[in-house]
Image (cartoon, rainbow, N blue to C red; front, side):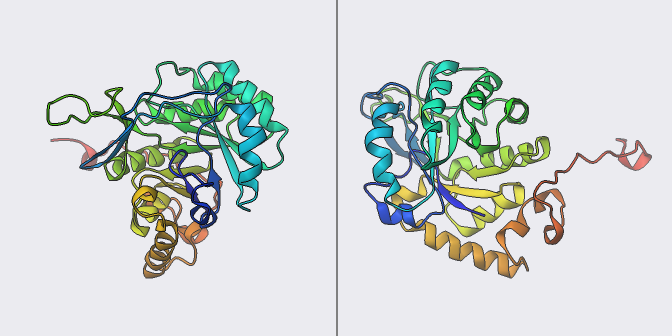
Length: 303
């Protein structure tokens, strides 16, 4: 199991020690052209987590490759680049540019940003175009809002190598005058309120595909990480918790090790898929489960 950050939840150049505490650093989403993002206010706290409406602010792919990436390399941490866009060609173009960068280990396709108005709807087409443009591993980051299992199957069929589950869901916060706190109004909700939704998405996609999953959404403790592994995640990413607790990586690792030891797991990988009734001691990471099929006996009938 690897511990990552969720894209956009860590500035590695501002907090290099936090980035080095992780197994992989995932960049903020990069688009072909520079973007200023949405107007302030762009972040707001809520009772269940945090709302954000950043709007994919970034320097653009060329400046990222020329100025930001060389600085990230000095951290000594494997780098995944989050790629975004507003049409299929945007994704293909950025993936083609990054194909030339040996420093980039993998690409995460942001297919689910809730804070921009133009997002490609056909996940399969985007993944296929990206696959044609790069040989690097491709992880599709999906929204839990739609039928995530069907979307995951489409991403798998188009050539994705893995899934990142999940992105934020839309939420709204009102201030005292009963007006939206965020300038954009609606933003993406992350934090503890997202955790049950993320668990459900990971659980469904583990059953629906053979792809490895990076689970994320509301992880604040080792127990949270263990639950994502049990639901089917192979790796875990930290998001909102890093804003309040930059040292969360080390703490959550220690808590996870204690949770695993208490349940007799020799390693985190042995816990993957146990919520599906799999025996973690002999789990083949490439194996998947099928829904149980029951005979229509009297014991299973209503009445």
